[in-house]
Amino acid sequence: MPKKFILKILTAGEGGVGKTTLLHRYVEGKFSADTKMTIGVEFFLKEIELDGKQCTLQLWDFGGQERFRFLLESYVLGAKGALLMFDLTRPMTLENLQQWVDICRRADPSLPILFLGTKLDLENDIMVDDDYAAQFKERYKLFEYMKISSKSGENVKEAFELLTKQILERQNF
Image (tube, rainbow, N blue to C red; front, side, top):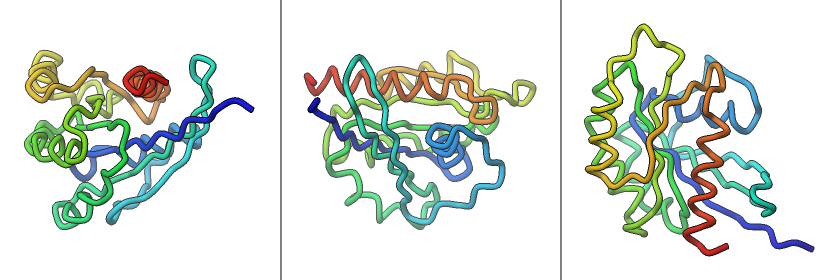
């Protein structure tokens, strides 16, 4: 029986950036415009095969509101990677980026973090340009930056595959 890799992946970012919507799109293959605010943490599972390796992705959806952040410190233990998300139409969702990086990397200072700009489908409302996002990526040592749309599905599967490959390479799996 081939070995199965269980990978704990965090999703983090300010409230309303689309973390839960992204996970519904990826896990269930559908867009849901009416997701509820996440209180504390929620969990999703996704079975994938990547480069001949069977992987179970344990996707941890962190609530973005300030009042729940104290809960997160214990949830990061054992994480193998993270998706750090911001809303391309709301530049202020980048303001607390350092705090989110610190939370994600509390147990592993070199944790691979994929930086995602969400709501790419709202192209007429985008207020964060690629150069500005690239500066954040470099400053916080995030391994890659991508723009995604949970509504259209653009780059959703690719983002998870990119992070999973990075995790597998880092773990020498």
